[in-house]
Structure formats: structure tokens, C-alpha cells
Amino acid sequence: MSNGGYKTRQREAILDYLIDHKDSHVTVNSISDHLEKDGVRVGVTTIYRHLDKLLEQGLVRKYTVDGTTSACFQYASSDVSCHEHYHLKCEKCGKLIHLHCDHASEMCRHIFDEHGFMIDLYRTVFYGICKQCKERKDNEEE
Amino acid sequence: MSNGGYKTRQREAILDYLIDHKDSHVTVNSISDHLEKDGVRVGVTTIYRHLDKLLEQGLVRKYTVDGTTSACFQYASSDVSCHEHYHLKCEKCGKLIHLHCDHASEMCRHIFDEHGFMIDLYRTVFYGICKQCKERKDNEEE
DNA sequence: TTGCGTGCAAAGGTTTTGCATGGCA
DNA sequence: TGCCATGCAAAACCTTTGCACGCAA
Image (cartoon, rainbow over the protein chains, first blue to last red):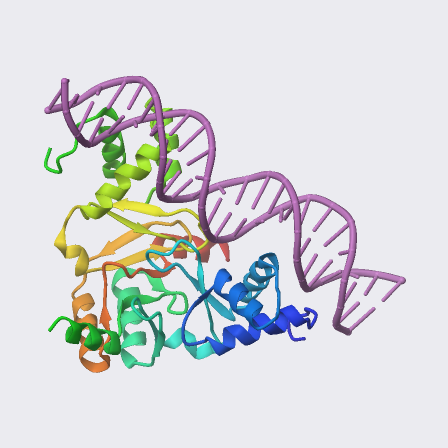
């Protein structure tokens, strides 16, 4: 395996689950629950340990979403280009949007040149409300 | 008192501490520890309860910094302009920088107009390395 | 005096650690 | 066979809640 680890039933199941849900975030509990429903029992200890490793390898992203007490994780392909675009996290639906936009590198340059701060776009997440959720909300309020 | 609460020794101590450290974040533990050193014992329960109230009133900001397990708080004068500037968090020294910059509102407008995503700048924190830490790091590497 | 404020103890939840066992290579 | 992986139990934390007592107004 590319990371030196063994290929085990548990590792496979966790990775599969993460990839299946790459469009939203998951928690240790949601992983544990869903795997159990699928007939694959995996101890939470194991899940924590795998997520830690994946985090180090940059294969998952870790957040804390407002109002939740446990950490959220989301699969992130180790794509180098993730350093060159925005990550928008919708606080309503949990979707993570990779927004390719020239504005990104320009903004980073501006902040570095003018203010001396070097932004790490890979680690930075913009919180807000996505288009769909905004429209839904606007409709409800009518 | 403007918020209807009583004026107590504990409340004063917590607020003073928050205001003294308005340039960086604090945790419930750091508050408790520092107050104790100053000879003011305040139970953590009380600290949590006051922070909750201050949060509701918008007088403190709450977030979780990557790698920490406990919540971080920072005094925020009920300044509306906190919605109009960047928050830069240095991953080395932990400093939170409030960067007033015209770029901020411009960028938000761009992302909303062009991509439909409404950023909540108040909640968004840019991670990266601040000027001082970057210089220190560059020097060490020589 | 009244009712909020305080702090202890206990509960609830998440995450980590120690250790014996299991299983990949 | 040699290690790493796993999972249980326990520990370590962080945060919240219940309750009796303290104290501001």
C-alpha cells in the first residue's frame, strides 16, 4: 500500500465510506453507525486512528462545524490544485465546494504583498450559505 | 447593567480578562488559570455560563482552532465592522489578526455575484503564517 | 426578601491510551 | 513469524446540568 499500512477490512470500509460521502462531511459516529448498518462493525478507536493517519497524509480535511460538538471530516483527494482554489463550506447543507477562481491567487498575493500574511488556501475554509440553500431559505420566508 | 445581569466579582474579572486579551484568543482554562494566579478563584461553570451569555450578546467570538480540543473565545467589541474584514489566524503563534481591507467586501461581492455563495466573514478564518513567524522561520532555515 | 449568580459534584460526550489479541504480509 | 491493526476498557478531557447556598438589588 502506498502509505505502508496493511490492507484490512476496516481500513477499506472507512475509506469507501469517506469516498462515498465526499460531498459532505461525516463524523466518527456517523461512520461507525453506517458501517454497522452495513454489517461491518468497526471500533471507534480504529476510526479515530485511521482518520488521524489520513489527516497527516492530507487525504481528509478536518473541521468543526458550529453547533456540533464532535469533529467533522471530509475526504479530500490529495490534489495539488487544492492549494489554488477556494473551499466554500455551506453551513446549512454541509456541502464543500471547490471553487476555481482567479480571484483566489490574486487575493493571496494581495494579502501577502500588502499585509505580510501568507495564507494557506488548502487549510482555509470559507463558511457561508450556498446558492441552493439561500434560494430555499428565501422561498420559505415568503 | 445593560444586559440585566448582576454586577459580581466573577463577572468583572472575566470581562477584564477578555478585554485585556482582546488581541488573541483565550480558552476557559486559560481564563480560569490566569484568574487564579491573580488571586481570583472562579469556577469553570461560571466561566462557561458567562461566555455563553456574552456570545448571545455578540460580545465574544467563539471558534475552534485546528489542533486544539477546547473552544477558543475572543472579545469582540460589538463592532459591526467585524463583518467587513478578514480574520487571519497564524498557525504558528496562534495570533488572530483583524485585517481591515477593502479587498474583503469586494471579494465577498465577487463570490456572491459570480458564484452565488454568500460568505459569512464573521465566521470565516484564514489560516496561514503571519509576518513575524514567517521571518523567524526564514532566519532559522539559513 | 427575591431571584439571579456561583460552585461543587455528577453526568454526558468526545477523544486518547494501555494492553492483549487478531490478522496481513 | 514479525509487526502492525484492532477493539475493549479505562482514562483524560471538555462541557453541561442539578442543586444548595451566596449575594446583589
